[in-house]
Image 1 (cartoon, rainbow, N blue to C red):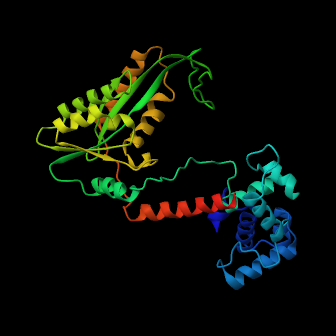
Image 2: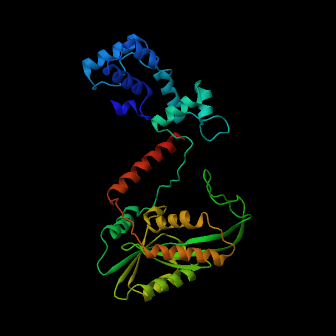
Image 3: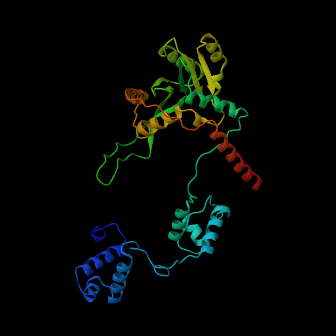
Length: 347
């Protein structure tokens, strides 16, 4: 009881009630307690009576019919949700906002926001999504996920891709340092100082990354990178490479290279399924932790920064843990396809 009375986080009504009961336990008269806490003597007597009858089992509970009454009825909430989910927004708008919906339904924007938040409705949010139509989706999925969950013996599994046209962006003014109440600043405009392309190969087992910075991302550069990987993976191991369907990866010269290097085996992800390639997760870390807020006056400084990030990552590598099975992913894809078909039929 004393903890509730001293609390700064508990509801105000419960704090006052706890103080009243503590004062009553000290033998203070109801009229004095009521005057001290701005209550009536009737309220104090009722709280004491409830405490003697129920103890703390119903402490803070609001009796049926008491408390703040609802200002929005169920019909209004149902109408709001129906219009949010199925009615076209105002002319020229791509989605409903709290203000446009409040005007449509005749309630306050704060009430609309509260209802949306409670029901998990987010008209302002949009996520990218594209469902694979690859006719060999299941076969490729099983192949790739199988390498993650049950890699072959005496082999290395690596995830490859290219991060092309990484821009060396310099800002037009120096950034201001972080101070209390404000983070770092960065100008909205920038200077372009050239680009580079990063070729990484993520070792699925160890989390280490073999990386090369090359000026372009043609098949010639890809062959150069394959030779780099070949030189760094011990000769006694097979190399299973997971990569996407970019034309460079299937170039005739690349196929000739594979014929001369039989220990390399390519495994292609289904089309529109880059999320299957674990190196994409590493790209996200590189972008968030190095590129997004970087300032690069030259391509050389950009490459040096990427190299430092790569070295730091390899000093303490952590593999990504794949948890989804090859059985549950197709079920989700089929469900998404069914929903997409419903939208197509409605339109």
